[in-house]
Length: 113
Image (cartoon, rainbow, N blue to C red; front, side):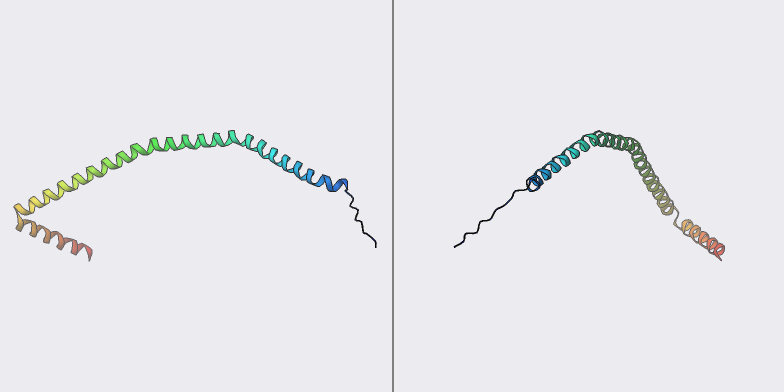
């Protein structure tokens, strides 16, 4: 009865492949860390510039928004006053108001022909 013996040879290449993979991974991690260290100041500068720009825009936008709000309020008040004045004039002289409206309508109609 013959017993088969298997002889395995351990080549130096087979033992170094895991070491090479580990070294490659370590180098990749180091490269990423170096790149991250180099990028951090740039990203910080960009973030600071963006914040500064937003602050400047907000400084300009706030007065513009206040002006728009004030102008809208003034326009609303002027419109309300005009409506009240027209309503008062119509109530005081209804026949004159109707005659004036008819005359204006007639002239606009003639101009549109």
